Amino acid sequence: MDIQLSDEVSQAYLSEVGDILRNKEFLSLSLYEHHQWTTRFMHSINVSYISWKLARKFGCDEKVAARAGLLHDFCPYDFHKKTPTGEHQAFYHPKAAAENSERIFEINEKERDAILSHMFPLGPIPKNREAWIITMADKICATLEGCHIAIALARRNRVVVISASM
Image (cartoon, rainbow, N blue to C red):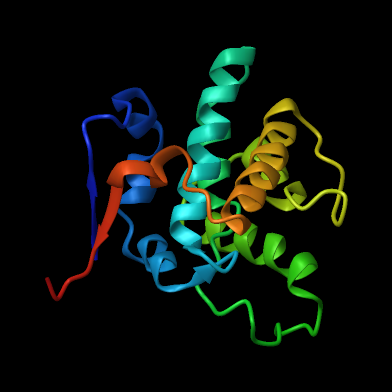
């Protein structure tokens, strides 16, 4: 599995998240439906890109926003199945995403907090500006995806996942 990126995707953005976008386990998120219309991969990259742009606009740490936005749902499993702990998915998946992100990528404390708190108010309150940005971007993306509206990098094939069989 690999991705194809259009020239419209900012090189500055890609320099912050390139290692994640080259990771095969992360790319497997493209196999999981998310918000009835998109994949968990496209949702995550949209949250990431919007978070990165907002962080730049507001003078926040754009690398933290881009990386944590990309990793906030890093859970390569079916959300419709029961969680190992029996918790509702809304409470379980931020912890699973943080654990997966720590296991595979070097994430810092701000990135970890943003991943753990992105479900606020269903989870912990965000502790930094980047976490608040990701929480907001996640809600915006989920709402638009639920309405079948393509946004950010999902529009005009800016990012396309290519399966190995092609």
